[in-house]
Length: 598
Image (cartoon, rainbow, N blue to C red; front, side, top):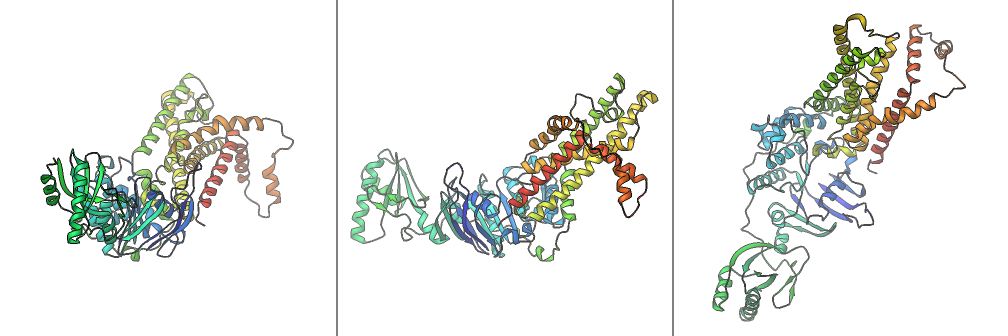
């Protein structure tokens, strides 16, 4: 059961809030439709419920707020807008990646693909999917954790009638098994067909909360649509005859509404009666058909004789029984999975990140391009002169702010936070602090492994090719090569983490890459100027002092490691990366905890 209480969005630029004190509920075993025109606040209401947008109010899922649910993706299935995904990833690979995020077995991906009718297209790439297939895949991602609640934002938008009927049948079947379904719609006819209860909002406020039968009686009224060049005359004739017939027979009232131009609508009559009246009075008719009309949530009908009638009167019309019903022949949604699942451990986010990073060719292409650029630069540097050995091995010309491998590590880190904030299946988890910090830890570990591997492979490849081409005439390993190697790996690792944290903080891959480039181009010159000033004190002799003050005596080789670390930290690039990482990590954690529901 979903209970939304007092949802209110934050007003922007002195404008009224998009959602204002909205309260409603969606019961289990029923389909609840949140109905409204475009811009009425439907999507904002869902985002407020899922704690994706700032605002006031509370949403309870089976009596618990989102931050009190241990594993939200197992209890709430979400589909917001289009289904994001890398175009080169397959449907099965995409769902297996999300299954790791939801903490469910990978076999669940094949189960939900069968439910939504995509089992035959499991190995097809997402870039080749049509809109209908995308929506099916979005529903599959929402069903991954076998949730008890579905929250879907206008899932039928743009679908064909056949796809819409299939979708309605699936949601009906899900509700029949005891699930709670909350779906938004802009079409009143669709809401009447699919919903057991319809909640109507306008400008963010609740207008009506009705059972489907009462809603159909108020808004989905059968009418005769007429188009005639003499619409005004026909409207007055029909209204006069309707009033005269009502006085004689006392039957149900006939309402004639002038829609504007050459169009009129006749409620409470039939095509035969309207056509006979037009024939008797010699009025030409271009169009005469029976249809179901949406009278609007609050707008009263304007009769042709100038009188007004309340469109919200449930006695005014009967529900539309002729509306097409959704197909019921859809696969049953497998249930009971959540009861058999154990709590996901810390390895689940790591599985998700590994599948995300290795499931597409983007990371591999970036690494290959970086290795090629580093190799070419190393060969050119070795051919033109004798630069410092570390710059030669890493392919780092003086005019480049970063070596190719470090720049590629930063780009891979920035790409790591590419789409987590847009995946519908991960939307419920964004409001829970431990889950997001666990995901951050997994990303830090995977990006660190990728950066270190890239750093070492680039050194080995550049060194082997330079030695092969130029022999021993080129000195590859400088004095203190252990310190140089530690500095090189630290630089690559720092760039990867800086790109990752900045992309997660600003939710933009481009800004993550900008943060990586800002360290050598902006921060390093400033720190270089500060560190170049003579210091009144020095850290020389710190390892010996630490060794003499310690209770347990460590090996003398550890002194060399401490001295090397101090030399690395004294470099401007080391200070710049350390400060950048500390600031980005603190800002990221602060935004996570500030976004926690209170």
